[in-house]
Image (tube, rainbow, N blue to C red):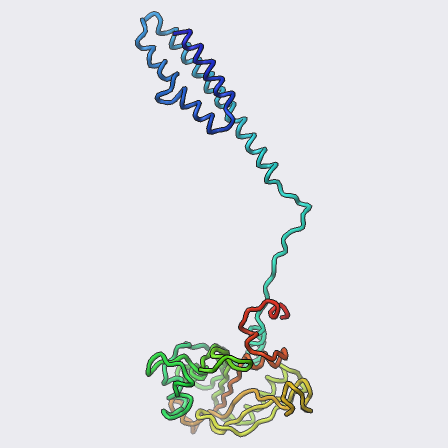
Length: 339
């Protein structure tokens, strides 16, 4: 038994010492100390020896086991240290190499203009209101005095979900909701996306952005509307800008007007930007129609108001002299980095 144990000891320690990695080392442990290992089998055999031989054989086998476990722990530690050292060598970071430059984003030109628009109107005492983009026809058309036969209600101009639901064609529907929920005095702007059946080209898109304004109070006149718009555009484009009001017709305002701005590139003398006219059409506006006020439960005999609506894309195109609206939607970084 002693000779067998001595021979087993040499083989076991040799297997530990020659193990090239942790996998081989674990295989050696199982081979000698596992449930079916050689040293485990010898320890079990000591029970079959004569009584006088058992203590010596057991002591010798336990001694070999202790030596094996100590050698195993030392080898495992050495292998782990070697693995760590290898990682340090192969995964070392060369701090002299140039770093990776992180690209920093910036605001989209539409958001730049919209944020400035909000800031101007908030400083004038307006509050922002929002509403759903999928809207009921009564808010988009009926309560805005737009009759059944009006061209705006045609399926060629409007995206219908069903007979009573559309993708809103203007944010005027938010103004209706504001008048239903608030009592005068009211001064709100309603920015947001709107949808119309327009073919995408240099100046049109089926999805675009509007900001509409509404004021309802006692004693409101067309002069208040003109003063508001002049203040807004002069803060946006500079004091040299001039406004021209032309008579127009909108079913929800009376009287109504289209507003042109003097071309800020040529000053009104005529250029390619304004197509030689000296003026650039900018927005529609007017005094809120008495019928619209009545639809919202506001007495038109006591209160009056004005409303206006401007396209954010149009302001942005003019602000940065961009000649194609599609550039705002194509996510071309070569274009967007300019802002």
